[in-house]
Image (cartoon, rainbow, N blue to C red; front, top):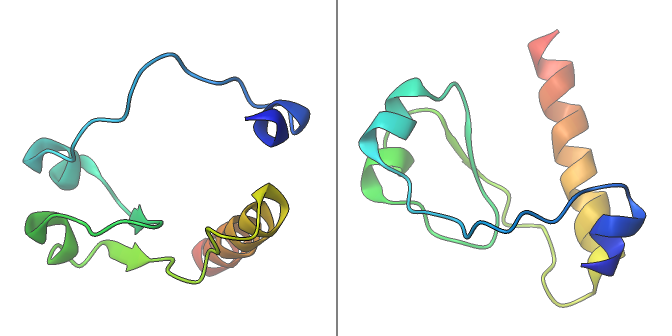
Amino acid sequence: MAGLKADGFAIPAERPTAIAAADVGAATHIFAIGCVLPPGAAQSGKASSWDDVPDDQGYGPMRDAIVRHVRALVDSLR
């Protein structure tokens, strides 16, 4: 959490919740980082797995991989 705070992100008090069908329907893109999406989300045509985000190298490499994915996404939307 120190890395997120150092990068200026607030740590929410809420816990993540499961993806509901309404979430999938309203989404334009769905990303899985270190998890398996439920079948409805995975088969929606909106899902991508960012399975190259390392979960064993600490915050910096995780952040860097996510930033690369986000930049690629933004570039693809232009």
